[in-house]
Every structure is written in C-alpha cells, then in structure tokens.
Amino acid sequence: MRDGRRVYVLHTAPGPGQILLRTRDAALAQARKFARHQGVRVWLADGDVEFALVDDFRANGEAT
Image 1: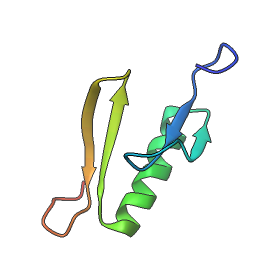
Image 2: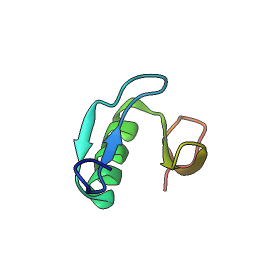
Image 3: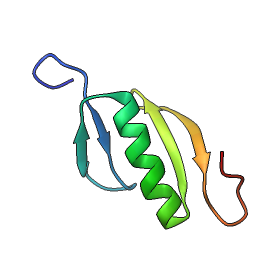
Image 4: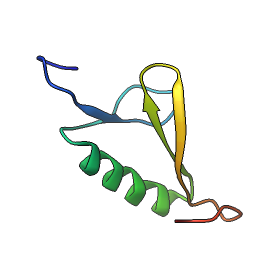
C-alpha cells in the first residue's frame, strides 16, 4: 500500500523494487514480458511470505 492505495512492484530477487505499477494486470503483463525475454519464472507474492508460480519461461519449463 502506498498513500492508501494498493500498488504492485516488480523486482528481481533478492533486490529492491524496480518498477511500480497501479494494477495487478499491468504488473503481471510486464512481469510476463520480462520473464519471457529473460527465460525465467514469474512469481506472485501475496503479502510477505506467500508465493505462487504464475509462468515458467525457462528452457525446461512449460510456458503458459
């Protein structure tokens, strides 16, 4: 939350937030573009400890 509004932050782990987006859809779309280009996975964190795999763009993963 920032200024009373929910925001979404993209970052590479372990590192600081790099891109601030206002909607979940925009954040996921940007994360998928980056992950596809880099050949990595996309994870969604719900709070501080819960992570869910969204997409896997590694060479041995199955992209969705």
